[in-house]
View (cartoon, rainbow, N blue to C red):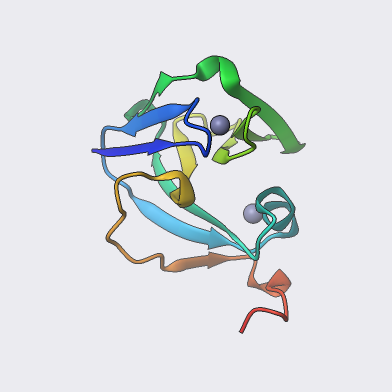
Length: 119
Ligand SMILES: [Zn+2]
Ligand SMILES: [Zn+2]
């Protein structure tokens, strides 16, 4: 089981299940949303993710057709990325994990937009 929370602590979640796939997404939209070189995600079954606190603080933004990004409206922490045509899976941001994730992040997505300022 993994636990996670946003920066201000309003939103808390638990993941009851396996992390099947982790990725760093270097796409321009993830860079904008995270204000960083990439967005780090853990892909889990949507049924494994349980919001345990603060669902009223969660806001969703459709960054493109068919994609929903959830974040805390109080502190701005990015929480999840989900395809609306594949609701059974959800990508949870690794940076909001409170339980350390001990695995490796092996998948790189959209490396074509990796910024030159990152070594
Ligand atoms: Zn927050
Ligand atoms: Zn992305």
